[in-house]
Length: 109
Picture 1: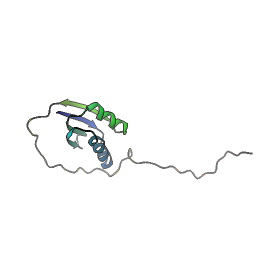
Picture 2: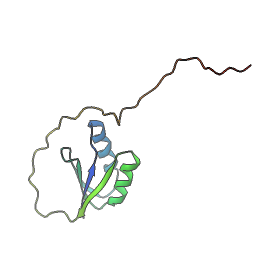
Picture 3: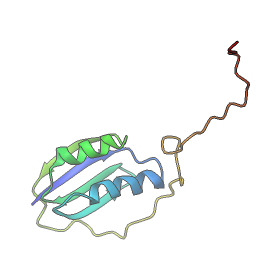
Picture 4: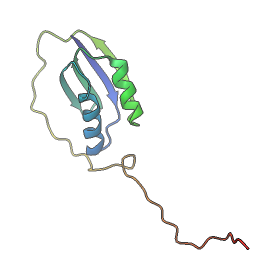
């Protein structure tokens, strides 16, 4: 079993949900923990770190490996996860539709 720490860009709630969904699709994961303030994701389990980063980058979520190692035997301070105040959507996640209502300057005669 390995402990993988990834640095990800979490700008909004939609980014967080997308990142967690992509990571949770991999087999062999025991636990996933996200620290929004540090912009890190900690994954414990038998999973390929490079495969996870590739999947995140394919979904346009920049990620890099911080560390890969054995999980600590002692449990870290189990704090109650605090909900950070993230906006519901950021400019990266927001899709923009441009509608041009101009007549075409091209004419066929």
